[in-house]
Length: 205
Image (cartoon, rainbow, N blue to C red; front, side, top):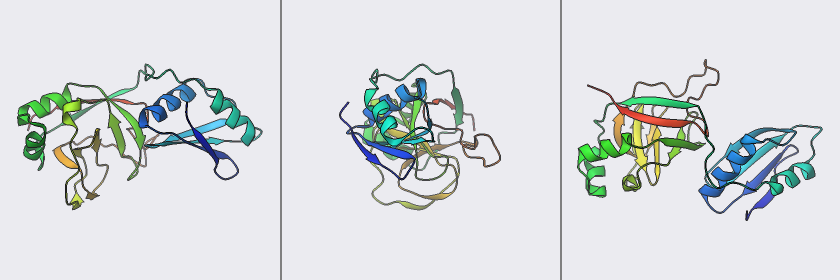
């Protein structure tokens, strides 16, 4: 594992890695066998924040992280959610053009693969999903929208995602769902958390 570790305040270590795949592998290894004192793991595209509490010390946590040998594959998890989607997004035709697929083939590709939440960000409850059909990798829109509606299902790069609330956004919109992915009254509030597997299912109009 080629990583750079940085002290992040009194009770955290920031692990800087080169690729998302390395972040995912390290997150999975630490989540499956968490060293003593570590209380939270926060993955991002190229980093993993490791939070700990006393009596654990910074040096001990650094040693524990460096000792991990990630397996390189996602662990088996029983947590899986199914998200029904009405595929009528404003950018569905553009995605079909960019990928060389028909609109029907885009839908089939999006629903035909199990996605996994790699990390969260951008807005509370927004999960970056990976593991989809590689044919669906498309660039962001050249111009972002000022208002993307709650529940919009979108693609950008290798990722898919569900907008948890109305917000600006530049991803390609392929559909919408009524599934609530962020509910402050729920425990936990986020439906899409790192490691959760996601299946998209086509909903009838």
